[in-house]
Image 1 (tube, rainbow, N blue to C red):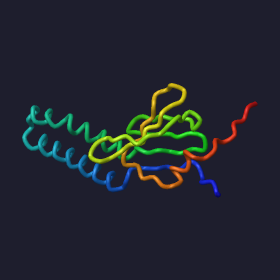
Image 2: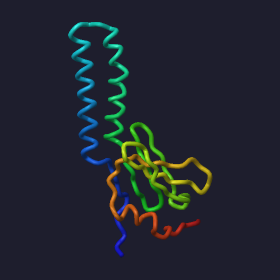
Image 3: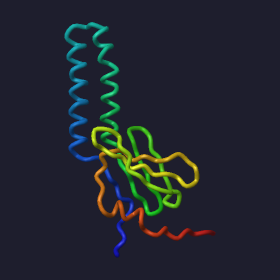
Image 4: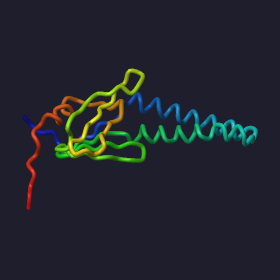
Length: 141
């Protein structure tokens, strides 16, 4: 069996990213239109948290991914990232996150916090096979 090249990057589904950016840009345009027409600070303040949330959601859609390395898995969100060594993965489970979607949760053997990958990732058979592969040899010097 030929080993895949590492690192391998798995992103959110393209339709999800396009829809998220469309909604985010639409909400920001709505805020600009409302705030620029009649400068009512109350109405602008009402839409401001919604615009900030849409910026966060667009950043999440642009950056969210899972990266497989030979010896670890890295998950990225809008402004954070977490890593888990392959040897530290004790179990994995699909957990429901709403609207019929599921996310992959990885449980740690060492008692560290669990790692949940973003829902909507487009994966392949090599992603699943990565969890079943034997551990790479560790070098000690």
